[in-house]
Image (cartoon, rainbow, N blue to C red; front, side):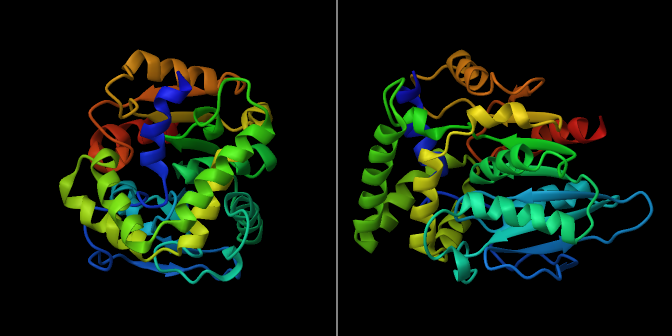
Length: 309
């Protein structure tokens, strides 16, 4: 069953199919500034200001994504929220800095924990899409006192289950991850870009957003993206889920494969998050991987309900 879903999730979260927005980069006139926070792994842009009754929320984009992907959500949240948008170094035009080699997601999760502490944020809400969801899970499991609420958008806690037979050892999963990484790294640029174009249609249904996906992906460092993708395959967070104390909701879509029914998809998510007590799972239909762009009303309704509790 997991093997059947592998291709769909691969397309949805691979480095050459990772970011979307409703308008090209630079066309939004937002009122934001960058946080006074030094890191070799990421930087943070802030929309809104602290004040009485203002709550903090951290938005983490996916692989090769720009903070722009969250613009519709930022606009929706409006007054009452100070929004902290993470931009991972090496993605969407950001200098590579400390992400040149090795894992990306785990170090970024640690940096977000440090950011929360140094900025004096009081249990902010955290929302992460795709790889950003993985980072959110790492953050909430490894720093449970730092997170107030967690929403994971279209991501399972162990992607490796989709790339290896059931019960495969960690070494077997790592071997598969190494093969995937080698293939991505060795592909000629022209082939790499062709794979990007071919994958976009399965990742987002909103045609107007597709060109921006390619723009941001082209501006991402290939080494950082491929290294991060390998890390996602080998990282199994299921044993850590029980450490999460923050209320958690996972929103997801049916896998983009005609053989995968909504019921099969539901079963995969239920099994994947079985070790997280109290988790709420919500499927949103008629959307691809970028749920908040394809179905913004349904996504924002789910987000509002979750944040209001």
